[in-house]
Every structure is written in structure tokens, then in C-alpha cells.
Image 1 (cartoon, rainbow, N blue to C red):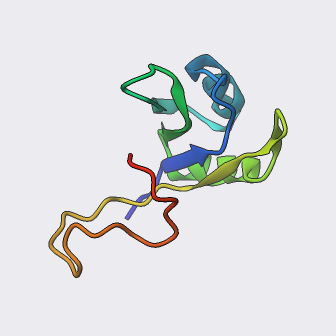
Image 2 (image 1 turned 180 degrees about the vertical axis):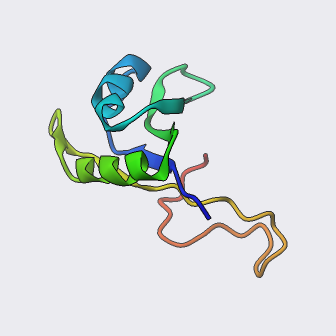
Amino acid sequence: MQQNKLYVGNFPYSVDEDQLRDMFSPYGEIEELALIMDRETGRSKGFAFITFATQQAAESALEKNGIDLSGRALRVNMAQEKSGGGGRGGRRGGGGGGGGRW
């Protein structure tokens, strides 16, 4: 299965879509960039999903993982597909959560 979608997180709330595009476009063509916004405040939640045209571009962009961006270590990894609820545990949340709602 081709994996060309990245999760990019732990960046400052001040980072906007254009800045992310500038940071990641050198790795290849970006098909989609979804900056996740808080519905109530309209402010960035500090994470995004970036879909590249090719798996190779996405894999190359993984080198951004851990770089310092305004005092925060950027987290970049392959996005995990949400399961359709047909597996074990039903609607239970996964581990490692901070108790916050998405």
C-alpha cells in the first residue's frame, strides 16, 4: 500500500498553511495540506496532515522530524489511517492520550 500522507505536529499555533507549504514543498509536490483548526477559537491546533504526490516525497520529508521550530521539536511521521470501528474495543480512545478532546 502506498503511503504518501504525513502527520506534522508539535508546531507553534502561529504557524500557518503557507509556512508549512514553504517548509515541505522542497521535498515534492503537495497534493493536499490540512491545517487542523480549533472550531471554537479559529486558531491552529498545532498539527496538520500533508499529502504528497508520491510516497518517495513523503519519505524524504520525514527528515524534518525533530527539527527545532520556534523552540519546539517538530514531530513528523507517516499518518495512521483511522480504523472504521470494526475492530476490537469499539469507540474507545487509544493509549497515550492527554485526556483532551479532538
